Image (cartoon, rainbow, N blue to C red; front, side, top):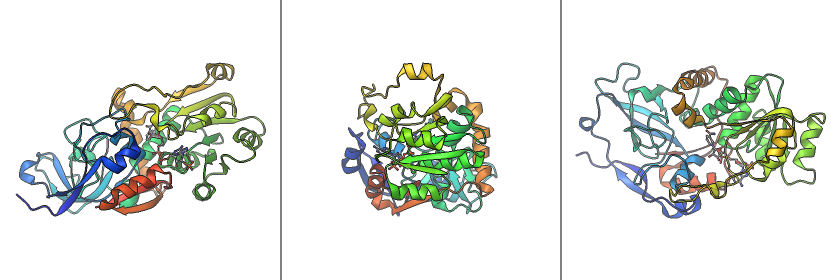
Length: 365
Ligand SMILES: NC(=O)c1ccc[n+]([C@@H]2O[C@H](COP(=O)([O-])OP(=O)(O)OC[C@H]3O[C@@H](n4cnc5c(N)ncnc54)[C@H](OP(=O)(O)O)[C@@H]3O)[C@@H](O)[C@H]2O)c1
């Protein structure tokens, strides 16, 4: 057996909340390079260079996410690295030495098959060949592991569900976050006008630098509703992209035009919607008033990017191909504000949990 030369993070038990998970739920363990003799013919062995630290990694570790793994497992939904070994049956799409990203829906904790346990917060990962793709030219390792999850989610919400058109105005909440900033980038690619909201003036300056046409700092003297109305000539926005939930969702229903589309993407402001520790049920679920939905003729659209693929696998290939193509053309450049060593995984999670991050956050093994 090969001596441990690497490290991996392991979730030991599901916590009650992300904050508790960060403090008590994880362990850092030595990791030996996987023995190729023990891998499948279709497998690819990757030396991991960078892995994203996302909101979903947090709520999965507290058992509040819809897709749960039984501990112990290694977190890290999205990772990238260098190919070190390729199985005899894996074909010739990738070769030893290639710099690759791993499709988190086919390998790692968010996948459904045999490669779930190979998360990205580790020195080595193993993925089936179908999950392994060369990194689009021009993307760094840190950018490449912040590509698919966020931009595919933005694609699913804005394009597949929201059918955003050039010239429309989109109100994006949590715009400094991973999915929010991806939505800002995609809206600009589509030719839409962006009004971005957030709690921090400094982060909103960064969001404006990334392309948002207007930013609204929440909690000021003028309400969000009045500011949106002023920016839209009193009419209201065409589309809301809501990854925040809670009070802002209710206020948003009052600053949309008749017939607007309301995209439900997530609940960053209400992370305790579901019980912790993997118990089911959502005692604190967000609720929207049907009177406003009815009277304003709204289309309220749920936008689960991963679950939608389970129900209709045909939506994945065009979405994946478009995101990879935009990245290869230089039209998508994920922003990564925080970089940590793997041993600093708890600090990385705190940065994400406390909302310090703009766009992406990574750990580097
Ligand atoms: N639909 C899907 O398929 C899908 C995919 C991935 C994630 N999600 C969900 O989408 C939501 C956002 O995910 P993300 O990856 O973009 O998270 P993120 O990177 O942590 O960003 C969330 C943003 O929400 C804002 N926010 C507002 N109120 C907040 C509060 N009380 N606590 C923390 N943040 C708050 C923050 O911006 P400011 O500090 O600027 O206000 C923060 O940057 C999560 O609920 C996640 O589970 C959904």
